[in-house]
Length: 139
Image 1 (cartoon, rainbow, N blue to C red):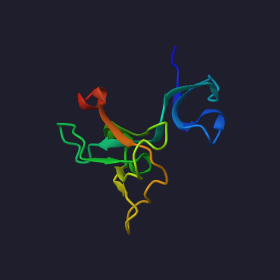
Image 2 (tube, rainbow, N blue to C red):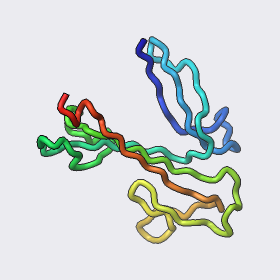
Image 3 (cartoon, one colour):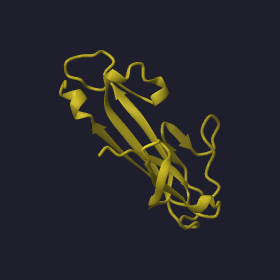
Image 4 (tube, rainbow, N blue to C red):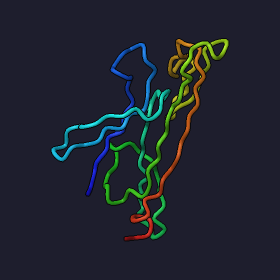
């Protein structure tokens, strides 16, 4: 039986005081979200980009990674890159606000960059790239 899922970042019970988490929602047959479960606490952001074989060469390698709204032809998507920005659950882990880089932006408060965090949480980025075998192998 084919089953669909939606992954999203939110807060438990939509309460602002709760830390952000990664959730998975199971899709019902009519496309509505049936059951939601919290997977990982401390996920501040999740970004997904798609590796596209723009030159359509026989090696089927990704020539560029782009967000979904910029993919010119889904037929040439050969990989998916998922990045999670994780934050410590407790505040005050570090002595002062720490700059970080995520999704091509540096958050350090300097001109032209993102704002420095307003808390003293530790942040780390975890990224993985997954090859879509059916696309890479030419199936």
